[in-house]
Length: 168
Ligand SMILES: [Zn+2]
Image (cartoon, rainbow, N blue to C red):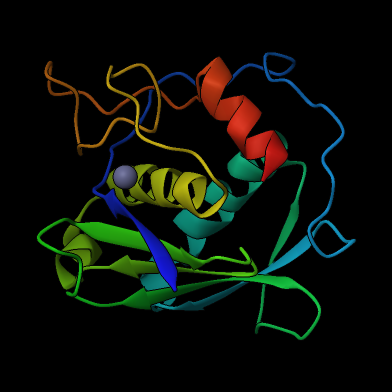
């Protein structure tokens, strides 16, 4: 059985999250390790943005996401190109045990700018680590590419989102 969250995309945030503004409570490890493998199948065009997104989300989850093939005994996030995204730009799902998450990126995202791709990856990695949507455009979990003012959502997470990310 799989739980799903609609995932759209985001765009670039001009303001980087400032160091020290995120909570870091002790997170019980699902599998006794903070290492999470991120197995990507979307091509080199996403590599640079993906590395940036991994470093960004790791700060909130206290996980140690590593690009590489999924391995037994570790959580895994697979990133694949798929248009089975229910009309959204992207779609993230995970198993009940939370061990494996899947991020689907629709083909159109490959043509978006680097900042937009990174914003989308920040958002989807947020979902893959337990964050839900933000009804206000005050964080990366805003469920649209851009805020009403046309800008990318701020590159940060709200307090509630940080708590969810720290617990995942
Ligand atoms: Zn979403």
